[in-house]
Image 1 (cartoon, one colour):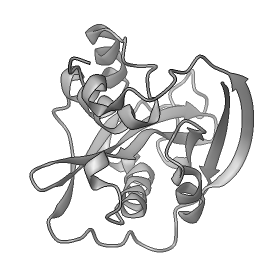
Image 2 (tube, helix red, strand yellow):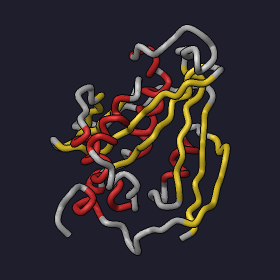
Image 3 (cartoon, one colour):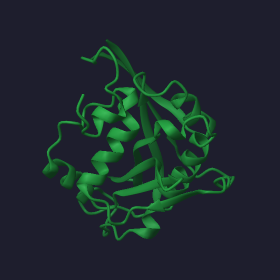
Image 4 (cartoon, one colour):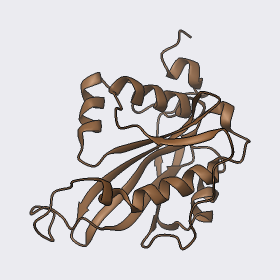
Length: 202
């Protein structure tokens, strides 16, 4: 299948503050995130959309991902269960810190409640303020010397395997397309679904 991957970025924080989450919903930074829970969130949100690249990761691979300095998981909860999540990861650059929104999305039961834009707004705010919460390496303006702690860019990529509203959601929050690439990828005939992607028997 031909898959289109779109990279989007913003170079300054949005002027408007994120809108409030609805009553009964809360967003928490998962400071005690484990490989088991990170993998569960990935399968829960990505199962309906053919997120498969990390399903075969070992626990050690997940642990290494979580150990990258500055990595954060923000989990949206409602009705006592996870409704979605945002994974952030800072990357060193000569002009400061580039924060990637590595994964973002809602669980199936949360779709259709008007939460996608809200979660992304709060995720973007968390990305721009990430360096204020983290002790990141400093000491020079070049990556090999450490990096300037202030965030200067927030970026994300989405692809045609994601939800149909993903690209429009990013653009509506102020992201601008910087690159589009097409490539042939092996993709299952239909998504595995959240049940199978979180480890349930098929």
